[in-house]
Amino acid sequence: MDVLTPQQRSYNMSRIRAKNTKPELLLRKALHARGFRYRLHRKELPGTPDLVFARFKAIVFVHGCFWHGHGCHLFVLPEQNRAFWRKKISLNEDRDKRAEMELRNRGWRVLTVWECALRGRHRKVADDLAAEIGRWLEGERLVISIPNRSKAQ
Image 1 (cartoon, rainbow, N blue to C red):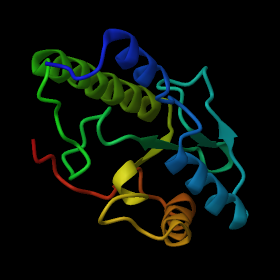
Image 2: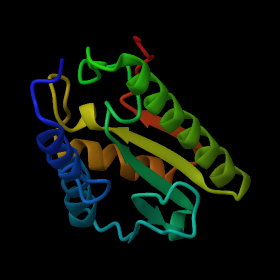
Image 3: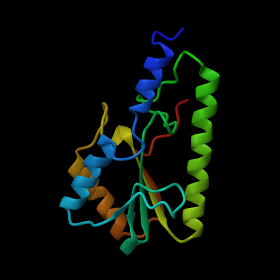
Image 4: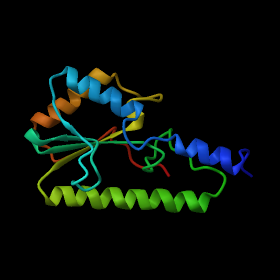
């Protein structure tokens, strides 16, 4: 049983951001300080990437661990309405895979930064993470994920 009324739950859910999240803002600030310039939330690209580095033909997604089904300590499937949440998160994961495939088909390199890389018990210093992303941007690797953890659930 949900401890919140439907109105309270609706209000809480409406406060969850799709873009300009704290992890995304931290990363943007650190990358900008290192001299990297990017475009934000390009709607014409599959998945509406968080950061687009046209000069490097590279995309960076900043994914929330819960909403995108990362198997880390930040992902806990709610006890209530489990079937709904499994389906929702599974659909999000499928959409992410399709967007990544379409971007790759268009010649883009794709990096996914998971929320747990910027907050939580295994977080990295934002500047260190920006340095790692900078090396990827200037390198040749096509697709990476930070942190690169396998799904636990």
